[in-house]
Length: 472
Image (cartoon, rainbow, N blue to C red):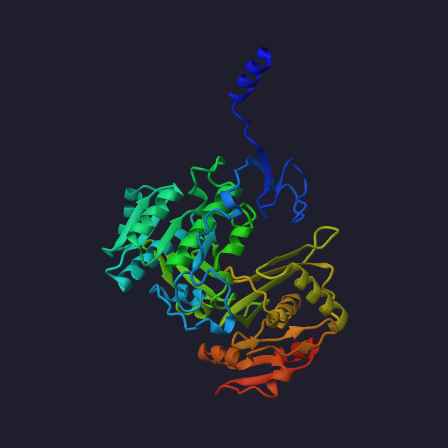
């Protein structure tokens, strides 16, 4: 009996072993063992090992103390609805993408490649926002740079707001405590992957840390009506690092596209609960920071070659903005057994479809050639109205015959070679007329009812063959 008692006392002093789980970085699913494929989202090689955290007492999710509003059920008709008063950042392109400005209590996630200008844009926006809400403070939390490093960038950008506060901290508890004491008009965290909660045993940037930190920041933003910006790192595939649930939790997801040797940056909304999810903003990177591009259409067409085969201009709809872009194509004899298909800014499958239509319905022997298609300026087009422009660019390069540089081309192309009507044709024509275009090739369905701008000739076509005959 004595032996058993001694043995029991020794066992009680042994510390319990840390429990590990394998969490999916895409959906957050936790598994007790490693699996090649996540059973929840069906993605491969997304489970990573981390130390499991103890469940919070009472079963309530960690970080939620009640969102803004009532904590008890109530009839929806009794909820007082009012128009949200937005805070403008003073950067027109950013306000456009956000849907008109920052919504109080909104949680916004900004992602992009390293060095593309996320911190630069955010610091400039906070400076102008601080000037607008003075004397209330605005808090910028940096988890990657010291205050002196942030000051160096601020001096280069001309940041002068006296009420813009800087805090270099990675402990999310200290950040939230400082935010509660300061009560800022806006809060920015750069970046979410650097923040951690001490009570969690996993390392910063893991699935558990990102999810829990984001949950507490969301609770703080909703309860205090503080607009909060989160900067997120991206993976090699271009997605924001961390669990996919992070993008579901926030109100707005913005991606910075471009970078490298290209001077232009495109800010695109992939999700927006308070505005259009298809808006874009265009910036140019200069020595003094990011500069807004007020007229992107003129910028994208500024270096367009004159009388060059394979070049066509179309008007792409992006949110509430119509952008005139150049679609370039090069058709060359193949030097291999299998012809190449390369598309930049357009869906490669769509380009192959249009090439098949030109071969089968128009009679161009184009499928045996190498096809290269590019959207000038680094934009990505998903508007079906650019189909006809792509088809005519391919035909123009194949026949080595240039398209009139003052002609706009619009239309969706079907498998039968028909040209289908597009939405907002009048707005696209108006944008083209403003930039000096005098002729437009568009679907007959649009040409019959469109209000044509003064000085512009509109040619309605029903098939791709007819468009090639009318293009000259």
